[in-house]
Image 1 (cartoon, rainbow, N blue to C red):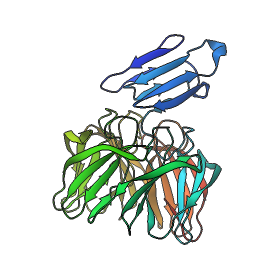
Image 2: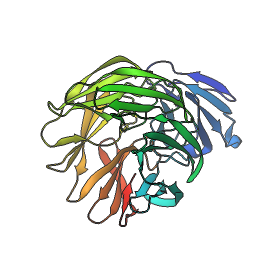
Image 3: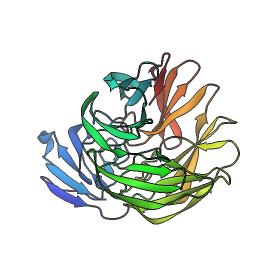
Image 4: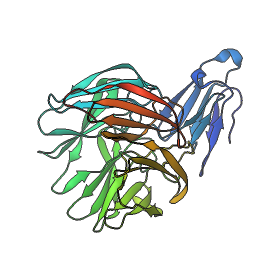
Length: 371
């Protein structure tokens, strides 16, 4: 635990899980991502000015009213510390954003429309390091990969990092593999099994490499999680034949460690998104049993299951749309659900493995899906 004094301070947590503490309410501070670190500024100088602190190697902020996990927030297009919901209409090509506060829609808009051949492949990444999520697109006809840089509900920039050749696909989840504060793009060649990384700055490829190759039966389950809390994203793998779940712990495009947290039995699948449900600065694994409807969590420390639980069960028509977002800004990830029969969109707001709240932000009409 690190605590600065009055005025401007520089705090470096180094390796491991580190917490910077502040005496005021979260609402009295602004938190901004800068490169591989953060700045925390005291906006209420009436009770003593904490100034602006520069943080590196810090995984959590402890305020008087809440704990905030750094580096885990996804799909926050406005930079307000709360995740939003991205939608796409398959009939019209419209892309829309619901700006979310808890379980309520507080705003929104339409950044743009997708033409023929274009698809959203990821919306969890921040490619320019401005603490706002961007949208990653791919044209399945030409192989073009494009980025919409987002500010709120508007496209503020973007570009084309590159093109994908035959056999190449973009894996689920945009991770920051070198810890520079900007998301990168994870690729897989379904013919050769090669796994590759494009290191991204804005919309330009600045580096990359090949961590490894996948053998028969292996798939990438997620590429956005940080399972050992070192500030760099790792890769979660699953073998569809044996049920084995494995990790590649990464530093840039090199595998520095890994292991097998466990095996999945009949009916079990890994849900989309790697969330941090216990706010320990490490990503966890969200599971769903399609036979029983059970939703379960593996709390992860490195490549070891350190705990877990069952938040609830899903009834007919319900599926998990996203499991890595924090809709109320409390520092713990929540679960977004969608009922394909009724169009209802619902949230489970979580504290560990317990549902502490939730609600229904809205309903999706014909043609709309969660992006």
